Length: 513
Ligand code: XMP
Image 1 (cartoon, rainbow, N blue to C red):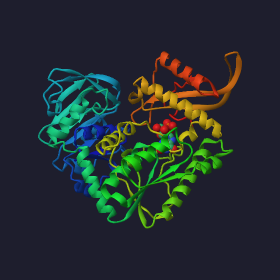
Image 2 (cartoon, helix red, strand yellow):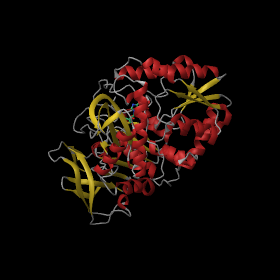
Image 3 (cartoon, protein in one colour):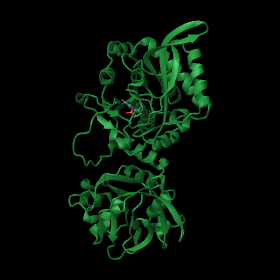
Image 4 (cartoon, rainbow, N blue to C red):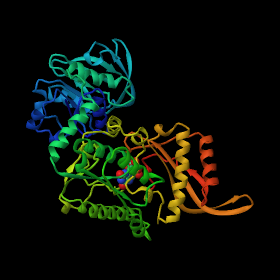
């Protein structure tokens, strides 16, 4: 296993992704929470130091624990990680007048294990740079293995101590051979064998769940999404009938969604499932509520109430299963100090009252979203379920801006079905992170046949993203958009106009509320 010490770079998670893709387990820890004992107990085969928005030239900026360089194990410093390594080992770093942002070209000057198989001597390699400072003097024992125009120490190596540093970011896709570099580090430098596979993870987690739960009963809330479904199937495999799932139908689900969850769990997997149709309660509580945050809070509170009441009926339940993922768990390094602004209060199955006194079972805590999908396949979940686009907890409730009316929900469901049907038919579903229809509470005039119409506007949204944090709108061709628009206006009574949302995130968000 490999340890990644995070100094607050935006792309630290990508380092972990690449390392895991190389079949090596790794964890990300904030640099200031890596005490010597904790590091020794983790017993890593190698350590990677991440980038950072800070500057090594400022006295208060973060440093790696000195122990990192004393354990006798390989260290790879990336960007800021390289700079602090050099500074801590006796080299020098200069605040930059030679900033490099974006694409740069690397000249490979000497052979190095990091380049094995991917980068040949004399090659010019595209890399991604994002730095203001740069190393100006190497610590003893290091040699230069590659340079770039503005980074004379773009890649450095101390083969004896097995310390390596790169000024560029091998973890991002804009460094095409970056994944190979990280694989060389984990396999050839650290000597990891790459045995961390999803099959191994599955067995390991099943053993962990059994050890944690014993003969206790576990309840699991299903949302209809991939994460809770994968968690439930995995736990069921570990403890069978000790697991009961609860599916709360909020009345804000899409067409066929509730039926799909019920038939998949009861029928396909034979997992005990309580299906609560609470739509009347949810829609009743939402009457007259039009503020987005108020809507989210109302839905969240109603959910907890219903879930709580159902859970209480399960005699002796001691554990609550959740589909928490690694990105929710990683503690982030913040340099701003202040509280971050709440853009949207997210609703998940979490946030249950403390008095429930249930211990959490979170078997996906160490996984990224795409790894959950791999695990889902491994567990036999159908492909169309595993590959589903994310669907938010508040469901269609946040896809009708303003007050939610039942007739509008019906209209939205119909438009959404057509839109997704066309996306699938065009073979675009998997290229898109998330696509959905939004029903605007705005009516406009149209003409159909000989008559005047005065109906709602439907907005279509489709984005690409890797983690939902940033997103780009999907560039459909006009012919596709025209086809969807025609079908929606012709087939869905209540909509007479369709628009396409071409806002990226930021400044927009993916959902409209
Ligand atoms: P935004 O709209 O904030 O969404 O750009 C980012 C991603 O999060 C999803 N989302 C939610 N997921 N509970 C969830 O589980 C929520 O309350 C929630 N709100 C937004 C959204 O669909 C997108 O994938």
